[in-house]
Length: 500
Image (cartoon, rainbow, N blue to C red; front, side, top):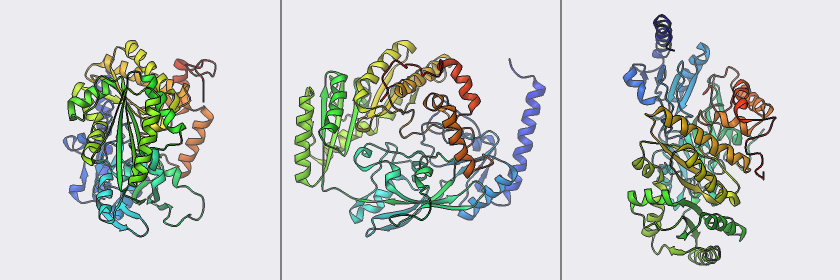
């Protein structure tokens, strides 16, 4: 039932009064153009890349200096106002969705590359610098920044740190965590803080791995020092076709078992390759049930040897066709399809929900077969693309957000994929984060005691709970309610499936 008009009026009055109070407090700290509160100005900030969940913020602050950021945090902390830090808004789990009674802290104006040190092979950049811009700045020195999310043309390094982003080359070169040396910023109350350092080791507890991937709950990142790596002399990519997803999944495990660590090892199923090929014309085999993209980089001798070994393994696993890139242009064309999987899906559906669970590599075929059954169960289509080399899934469930029933079925479909992944020995998130999307599924992944420990870590950094509240870590009450639906006697759904 709709709330009585008087109750809604009271709620609107309370919001307007609170908003005016926050605007007055921040208005003395920021120039007029750096503070937004009118609906037409704040609506563009109501969601990140996960468009299914929206919330208009009370106020948007766009500071231009570190002193302004610190002042905003101190003021909000004193007022008890929640703060949600935001970068480019490319996240896919609702991690940057605003708080209805809080301030969205946009860090888009912190976009300067402060230093590139070719001798130390590092770059120090502000949090709003785009991922790809780091590699562009390092290119004259023959260096680049290895983590390359598909959104690298737009996503920022601050957001990459928040989500511990990966990319198609993370199998060989690692995630953000493995390529970040130092993070500097502020705690919720405005206290300056620094994690890690440019030396081999930093004094005190190693808290850098705790902050990377913390989704803006522990601190606000303003500056990052990243590791740069030499650009390889040569890179070549194999496109391998398979007439069966089981064979393709087995081939992924076989490549790694052979002691080969490709620069990239990606997998796409037939619906995904069809959507991509129609969009970018990458030259994909549309007759294949699945294709693998396997890349080797290094010296010409190293690449030739590794391409030969991978080709032998792939043929032994039943590849029906192998195409090896013969030029840099062709290699980039192969990858252009994979990099454009998300926008290609957006062309064939009004909306999509991109999941992000992980599983052991040897279960790739099992999860694909399970997803195929879920398509029938929920009456929705799903295109699948994987960071296959490290078992990171990206199923894209296609739906229409304007249809409440489709949205509900999509949410159930997504939860089913996540929980099945956990039952197969995986996790609910590999690189997109939990945000608001996977809160309930965290109740399946972790026990109440484990959630309580994570909440204790959050409280150690942010005792008032003002940084990005209500996300990432589910409350015990939420898990208890969710448990009534999915957990029976302390056992997970799909408990009959083997755990690894």
